[in-house]
Image 1: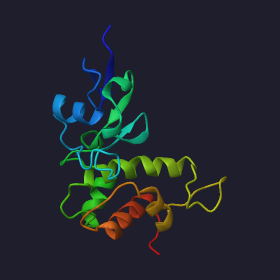
Image 2: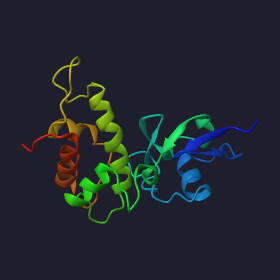
Image 3: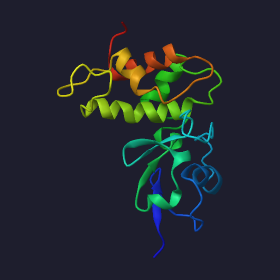
Image 4: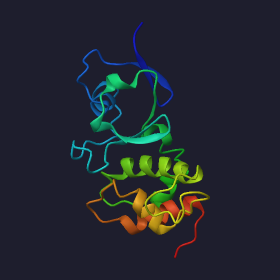
Length: 169
């Protein structure tokens, strides 16, 4: 029986070559070019995707490791005609300039908002137990693995806070 993973709701066989990264599988085998190859070392976050609800750097994992997993890329979050709430907020808040990092930023922010909703603390959280607020400090800490060379950070945080329903401070 072939090993498979579900990508954006569709099942796909895992490549036979065990050396293929998840990033290369998504881009080259499936043609999902929204996930970007940035540094290829897990330092920039351009390749961030969501696997089983958790954000990961797809350049640091092999496709063969994801048998049975559910992978969501930027293409699985929304479309130009029906963008996700975060995609819409990034446009409204001008949370991008060149756009290269934007897919990874949005995938990371999507999973990050779920982390906050589930009460998972971060280094910036005031308390290890209890509710976590989507404060600017909390968002900046959690998004620190996603780099933007254009420096659109203030607008990225504003877009995320808008979706989280947090007031600007």
